[in-house]
Image 1 (tube, rainbow, N blue to C red):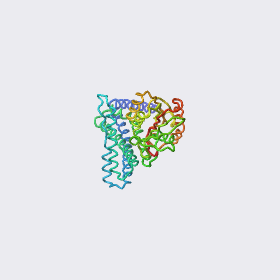
Image 2 (spheres, rainbow, N blue to C red; image 1 turned 180 degrees about the vertical axis):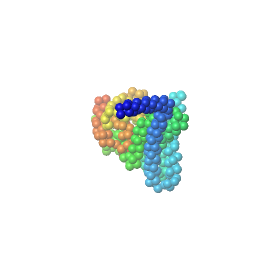
Image 3 (cartoon, rainbow, N blue to C red; image 1 turned 90 degrees about the horizontal axis):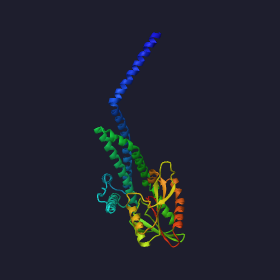
Image 4 (cartoon, rainbow, N blue to C red; image 1 turned 45 degrees about the horizontal axis):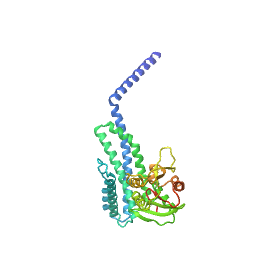
Length: 366
């Protein structure tokens, strides 16, 4: 019996060694293929999720447009055509005048989108057109994400490019986080609820309570009031439809007309991991996101006249910025208003004119 045990032990040891060497040679010759297959499966799974998010956004836009009693087939055809639309960046080999060219391209794109939406939703008000345009932009964004990921996935599978697949897999968590943020925004826009990015316009409205606004630029309004003996000019996009207006051009115009002593911009800002949502921070400069056209208008005019620019931001995640405004962000409104008033009191004197621009999307904010 002891001899049999020794023989079995020896055989088992040989089998283990054989299996070890076999697995070593398999991994040496086929390890890359196995790894690539596993990565392709992972990317394909995320691609399926992206396709579902893209379809949900498309259906949301379609259902919103059909509320205006259009022909379903005609509306769907126009939405499909718009979903594939794009804007080509102006040539930047000669950077002189690039901002003006970029602004023209963006304005043309926005006008074209609104015109198409008006055709789809006949009889819609300006606010409804703006909201539907925002929904359309979300659908376009998700469609572009899906197309880009699908392109690199199919390319990697076709050519066996493991480096391209490595890059795609590394970028997938960020892409999926962005896509889920876009998807969560669909519901807020569909229901006309304020979003986190609307914190700037909301603060401007609170500070101008009881004052009638006037439109000074396309989709942009201004309130004229006072605070602590200063003349206060509050600028924000026109609501309650989803719009960001043209605050840069509006502030530039007011600088020319009113010669302010101070410019304060209030906006949402992306928080770092570990920071609390709704945290208020102060800095210097113009707090305006986007491609930089509006920020250029303010910086150009303010620097020419040496007008100080103060930025006050409310921090939040990307998802919180484009989905329904959370309680943590709402609670930051009073603190932000207090910071704005303290800044005005500390940096100006009675009789001065101050511009406060509430930057952001006015979805659900009248």
